[in-house]
Figure 1 (cartoon, one colour):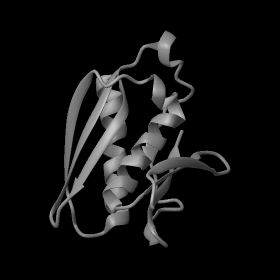
Figure 2 (cartoon, one colour; figure 1 turned 90 degrees about the vertical axis):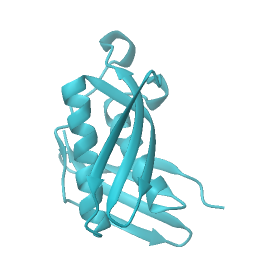
Figure 3 (cartoon, one colour; figure 1 turned 30 degrees about the vertical axis):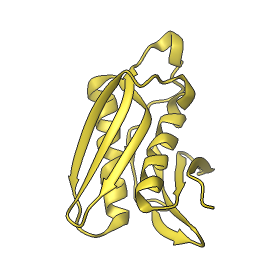
Length: 140
């Protein structure tokens, strides 16, 4: 049975984020958690506030992944938040995501780096055997 999870992969100067899931939605959500894990431990982020993101879906899942992660990075920057729980729903013409998190507490979260943006480097959204994989390199 497929299990949702995330990991990081090596890149010369930046960090690769990768999400796995039984569906593209789960893989996108796990990629967003991998993004948070670049900054701090996901387990240290309490789900105190909920935020929604909606994006237009052109049908290109790879481009949509970059747009989604950049929207998450934007919300982190302007709201000073981290997100430890993510749900993504994809429809034919749009993406809707719910993010749960809290404001950055430097003593609690000990942020390691600032993520500046998601890139097209090593960008992939594909089904590999029973799991969907959603990945790209993020600029730190």
